[in-house]
Length: 386
Ligand code: PMP
Ligand code: GLN
Figure 1 (cartoon, rainbow, N blue to C red):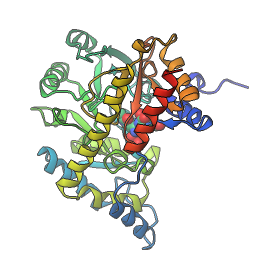
Figure 2: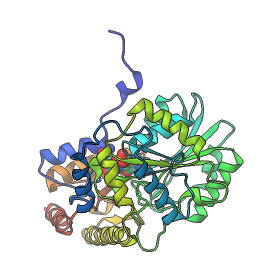
Figure 3: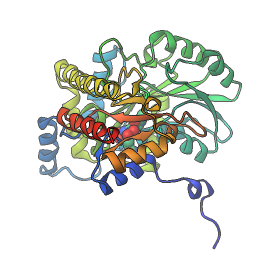
Figure 4: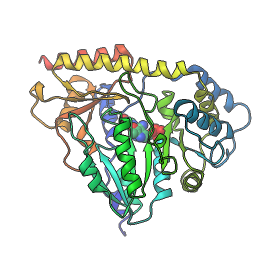
């Protein structure tokens, strides 16, 4: 038989699936893959259920149902003062995962260069490579995850087509500051490049940090595609409803990519998400506050046990250095060991690097009920005392 696709043949199963399966196998509390353990808002779920029964279950429009596109445009205006065309400026996708691929397809030609920032989300690099583009990787280093300005500037060149930026960032919890974004905007302008902005954690930002979409900076409106996810904003990660906002000329191309990927997204879910995005401000504030309390709980508990935690300003995740525990092995071994022996699953941070990343950090998800986080800490404590 002839060899099938070379890149996919070499690609392993995603670390999130691997660790979730291991967690199930060992009956571990899963602080690995990032998903909440409670349902999203009851009215949004009810709206999806109602919408299934009202005989509008055939193909919705290619770029999304009009009420969701209008809701996405309105949310851009309400939260960030962004002027997005509700008809031509939005494309609804099947999750942010599809949105990322559709945006990259919309912008890249084979041979184009893409600047990626490590640690990076696991779909970025394979999709860039599958499109025949060339990744230029720039590394943030723990513990500060500071933007390496010189290295970033050096990664840009005449062939740079775009930067893929994730803020708030998975797995670091870093929320890029306006000042850092200003530096990035300068590079994009200087090199006439685009930005694909993965902002799925836009509403999961804690006191002391503020989410600033790169798109809001001067001159960036025409260069940015901004991606959101209902999975994160409504704690319904299985729904896979994403949305891309941007200039009409680019959204037209994202929509053509989407037409070749999935064509549409479940109409009842789209209509329910439209209702969700229209929720009052206090819904969004409570979402962040509740999550912040869970971060505080896990952070304090991990510190008590001897981990050194790194500051998490947003997202579902906190990264923790386990060096002080005296464990003899790398992050992959540590994550597997605590899953099997302590009954708590985590994700090794080196999985977010293309090669040889740091080996002494794991990522814990804190989007769980407080009692579950407390039980996870108790299990770790028992294991450590052995
Ligand atoms: N981007 C980042 C940074 C993520 O962490 C995730 C994970 N959920 C996604 C994109 C994918 O989002 P969705 O579930 O909406 O496809
Ligand atoms: N974004 C989730 C995480 O980082 C995982 C999503 C997935 O499993 N594809 O945990």
